[in-house]
Length: 108
Image (tube, rainbow, N blue to C red):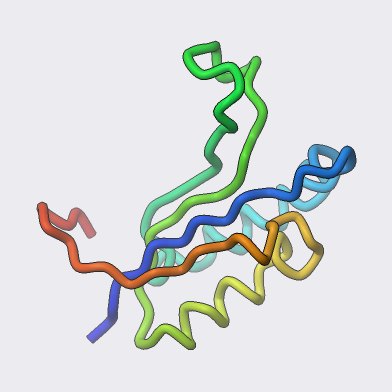
């Protein structure tokens, strides 16, 4: 039975982070979309700066998703195979991958 994991991957905060994200984005999205049996829900999140502002005016802060895998090691392998991890967009020292049990209805 697949176990459920939550991933939180903040982006690096160097001046080239936005350019790196734009360069990697098409392949990252294609890879994520090719794994619907594993990555169930997620997307980018914003930084706290500009909270309440129009999304177009906000800076991206990282990636969040819910996933299913047979083990923590298998989930971690998926994370480490992503371009955002391999090419250094995610701040790997601060990523979080935790297993959870849904309290409310699990939609997938």
